[in-house]
Length: 160
Image 1 (cartoon, helix red, strand yellow):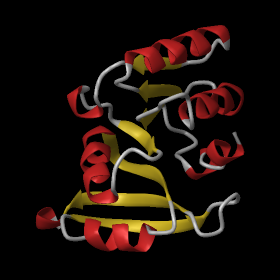
Image 2 (cartoon, one colour):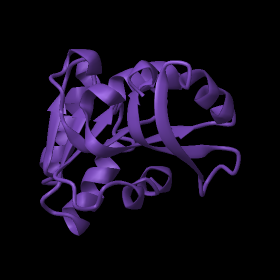
Image 3 (cartoon, one colour):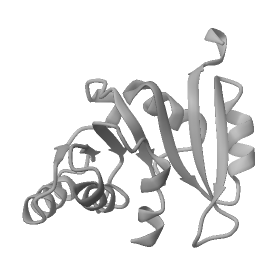
């Protein structure tokens, strides 16, 4: 829970939409939605999960907890662009591929929050071959070698 909760203050607090890609069992999406209900009540959390069983679980939890959410039981690349001020994704794909999904759903001026393990520097290096972006690697409070990559100004490298 704390691993997911540490993302919340790094997002866009005044945003109307947070999109969590590959939500799985609800980390970080459900945790973010719970925090948003209390701290930013107007913010909607869209959880994208292609596994229908997991999406059904997310739907039940969101209803039981009375959360301002939408559950999309599709692959992130098949979902209409979300224009979210904050996009998060945990353990979904290597950074170069992940940024393709993030760019599809991130609003202009938005921020992506991408928890990564000890190989984050190499992933950043590989991603820069296709993408231009500003990244702030923030140390995880639970895993000192891990980082939360706070990505802004995301655009294709050939458009930079």
